[in-house]
Image (cartoon, rainbow, N blue to C red; front, side, top):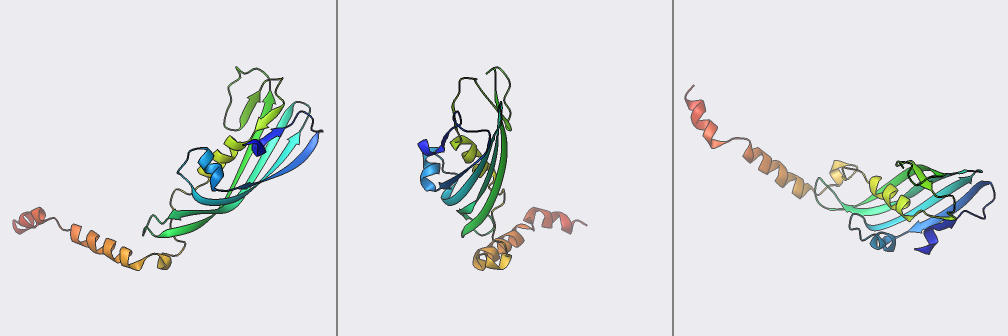
Length: 163
C-alpha cells in the first residue's frame, strides 16, 4: 500500500495536504471483516516543524452494516477525526495513541495503520436506523411478542396462588 507512505524527509517546513480514497480493498489488506462496503474520503493535514510532525486526519464516508434492532441492512454515514504527533528520538520512549516516536534516520511514515484504526474505532457501538419506523416492523413485532410471552414464568404462578 504505497499510496499511504508519506516521505517527509524532503518536505519544507509548513503544512502539506494529502487526500486518500478508502474503499473495500483497503480494509481487505488488513484482513478485516469489521467493515464491509465502505467508501471514505480521508484528508490529512501534515504540519512539519524542525523536529516534530503534526498529523490531523479527517474522514467522512459511508459503510454498510446491519441494524442492531431489526437486523436489516443499513447504510451509516460516518465522520472521524484523529490528531497524531510524531517525534524523533529514542525508540525506547513509550509511545501512546497520540504520540509516535520515530528514529532520527527515518525518512517516511506509513499512515495506513493510523487511518485503519481511526475508521474502525469511529464506528458507532450501536448501529440502528435513525428512526424506529425505518426498522423492519415485522421483526420488531415478533421481538415484542416474544418478550411479552417470556414475562410470566409458570413457576411463579403456583407461588402466587399461595397468597
